[in-house]
Image 1: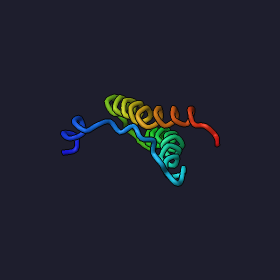
Image 2: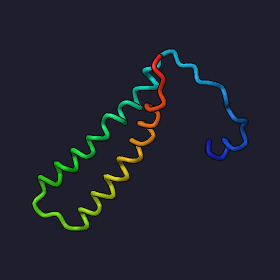
Image 3: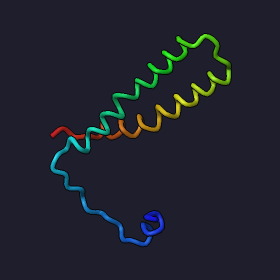
Image 4: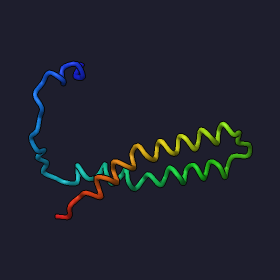
Length: 85
């Protein structure tokens, strides 16, 4: 519903006023620090599996690549530009 209304509303260019920076920084830090957990979980799965087909390897590689890029690139990019206050 909101997707249909949003294009006709004016742009909101107001800066966000948040009383606590932790509320905005915590999700970024979580996404950045937990991303290596994807690699650990995949390595654990490969080590524990006895028979893995080539399609499962391909699926694991593609899934790992996609799921590590989607949260990791934007969150690490934001941390790169973060200013210490």
